[in-house]
Length: 198
Image: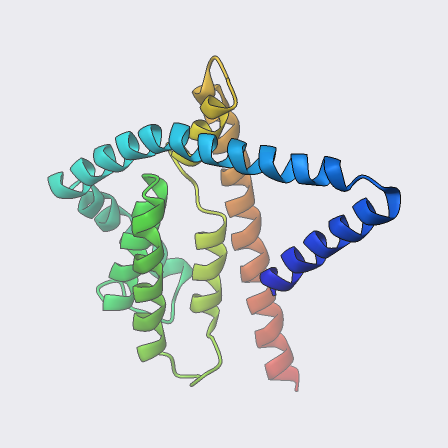
């Protein structure tokens, strides 16, 4: 779907540039954009490598396992379809820990593993249960202690203090998480009532 959106935007740009007689401007913008894109990636690479290394140290030192152990009892309460010591909750804990610590690349395969483990014990077959939906909500709103990607983008754009956004990121992501969890719980309760009345 995203590919079609990009294709539409590119075609619309070409058509508009042709109609307005600004094909030269379009060609210049394409070249300039490609140049800036490469520079941005190179400037971000150093910061991303630094934080990825720090997070790997946290992983190897056992910090991620400690956080996962702390999260397990909380997660089992908001995901009642799985027991606290189940493989599904352990996988969910590992994914959320990776997100909290800003391990974006590591969090994705952990999230896929968590969903596979949840599906194995899913009693509804191909239909996701409430706990699976809750996991998607939590994963989407993920609270990050160190938003390395956003800070790297700010630094590449010339920000004097790229990490000044930290408190705001924490507040907004925590609010999004609480609202998401509340909405998921309310929808779950409404679904249960409809099933009982229906």
